[in-house]
Length: 260
Image 1 (cartoon, rainbow, N blue to C red):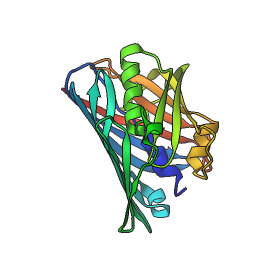
Image 2 (image 1 turned 90 degrees about the vertical axis):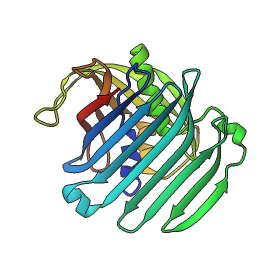
Image 3 (image 1 turned 45 degrees about the horizontal axis):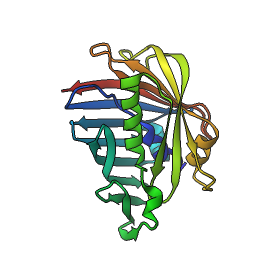
């Protein structure tokens, strides 16, 4: 579980519109098996030349007693010829026994050149060697932004994107999977017939003991996409992994607000 939850919560997504500048705030409830396991929020800011993504997650209720955890993620980047290019990625988390941070530093071409990490106040800065191998890669939050941007503009999911997280190089594969009904997770929640997309991790023949790393390379993460009633713009209404060691994981949107 130590590795499952922090990585799962990276899959929380956000809406995208065609406006030249806007801000989106998204709120989620997270259920894991029988547990009302967590809460999350995310804000996404976009201009014609740059973007910024902030997300936070924390465990909730009885699950918080079993496994207290909170984390914050932060990504900034440039938009060049309609492509998103990461300039900075940061992560900070705290569990019962550990505090961790990680930062990836990128050069002007969007290639990661340094990884700075800390664990319980012990800091380490590592130069990333063979940077040519990571040309064209990005962080996971930017990948998800590209995915939603593509869906908003073209109304399909199929794509393959390259990711480097500071240690591992892998591909993220999205596929169209038809439609599926979404039920509201709160009395005033969102519902309807949603477009269904799947996401797989291609480990590119690498090996790792991370649980979610194994799960998502063997089975999909499903995204169910609805449109906001007011603006008719797409947003992720639900995220599901059908099988984990604690049962099904369900991330459900409780509220979406957009400001232009």
